[in-house]
Length: 89
Image (cartoon, rainbow, N blue to C red; front, side, top):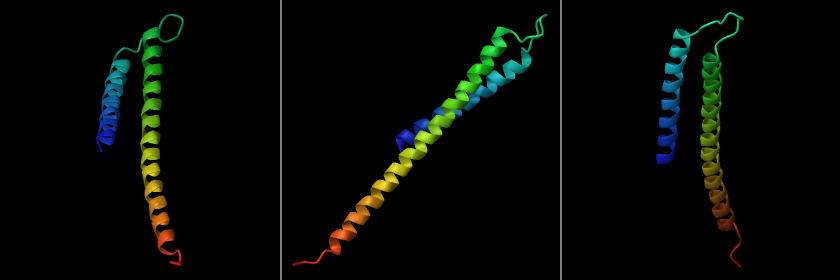
């Protein structure tokens, strides 16, 4: 449970950071004379993309952890049922 809350907090914090960086990015978009964006803007975009990927990975890991627990419960239930159905010789 604590693990899930921690991951949700990290996701929320990441979303807030991304939103503030996005706002900063919108405020600081500067096109140089060559027509390319400033290095800072490019770094902010790359960082936002990386954080989005990390958030997605956290979600996948969280879901796989839930699936693992669910499969374990199902496996234990199946084992108990098969033991009860064995003939008592």
